Image (cartoon, rainbow, N blue to C red; front, side, top):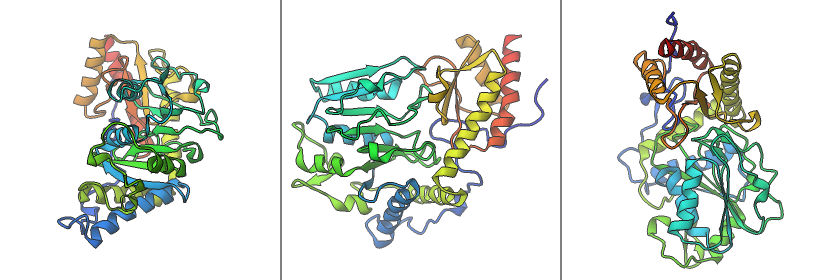
Length: 371
């Protein structure tokens, strides 16, 4: 029988992700709209976004944070093009975005000393194969595979290379080992449910030292440049962005940060996400027709949860269409390059009762497709 109750929020997309509970546009502070981002009020809002990010994420005091263009993709490309080439590079990937970073490093930057440490979807590669004398590029959470790293113990404290981490679907949902990370990138539209087009970079002192001491052999467009005359452009890290940001998106991001603070900080956000995964995991354990793509529990993502179903591609399409038509789950198909299945966002902005209300609908849709 068709379930009687529906999720109050059917938005389970893995990006852009659901807005925080109770979100309303009217609640945003729009005093910066129509003002220059270089005005006092504009710079103050941007600096506030940087400072609140640092405080809430418990980022070390001597790390630098900047708002940069083009979401997490722009942030990662900026770092790859600005920092790589000084040392050999180990690229660890087990899903499509990490594979994309490898392709850019190998084919666009055309570096000769690049090692790929890989695994198939649903698995994690042997990260211990990385060399601490090399630069290491990796994703913390494989958004399209549902596979995350369990910890950062495999990263040496005595490393001489830099660690460059794409953490866009991990920050604010998973504990980040900042002392192991020299470059971290993420975007507002993932765990915080913010708007797209803006990325964040977090740099350790070692990353700053590389920026100031190393000049790549290739030209860097203005939008990538973080230094001038061999010195870091400090203003970028206090709100003087490289290009013009959307002040409406900044207001939206500040709203999300304030919500994180209100619920108890990053630890509370992590707990919300982990609890959502636990609810879904309990359901999976009770049904033979559905399983996690991630083969081992310790590295299952608690944000972009990827699932395999005992359905053909055509049946999966019908399954997802049914849920969308009933307005109980939108945008939960697996990523286009990933194995067929579902991808259900379980980040902090998702309420646990909405996950609970979704589950009977998964059973209903499966049984309807199979009959």
